[in-house]
Length: 230
Image (cartoon, rainbow, N blue to C red):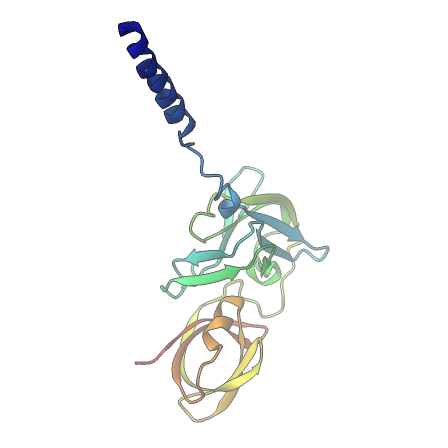
């Protein structure tokens, strides 16, 4: 009789151990995978020596790039002795305000380097060009290439783009990349919008007082960032 009573208990113990083993959890969550980090960068250099830095969202969901200031990229020019000859951010001022850029799945963001203006005054020669994004988490995605600089420059170029600020009244949007404003003297003028500045003006009411931070490119003010005047 005793032997017969032990059999059900042994059977139940075996079933319980098997059930616990079948309910284990994995250390890897397959629902998220590695899609969230599929950001890549590349550098395109054209025949005229101009270049653009491209950020690509290879994920299946929206990517939000966050920058701690109005500076979107950084680049350096190194000579054959690996000495830094030129740094993009040197002697520049950027608005100290968090900036965001949203990229949809598969979307590319091309940022021009404006090398003909930036490198004005740099001696002609063979260099290495290194470019990277200032967005959080992308600083290590550097792209480098050999670069032949002819030493040419645009007439009147200073080689530096200085960020300036101006208080204006928003009049309206001319098109996706330009707006019309009225300055403190009451005169109206058109300003271009950089990619990161475009979202600010979506739905902005006319007549709002705003402070714009801009650089002058080809004799035109290009807004880098903006905010409402309290």
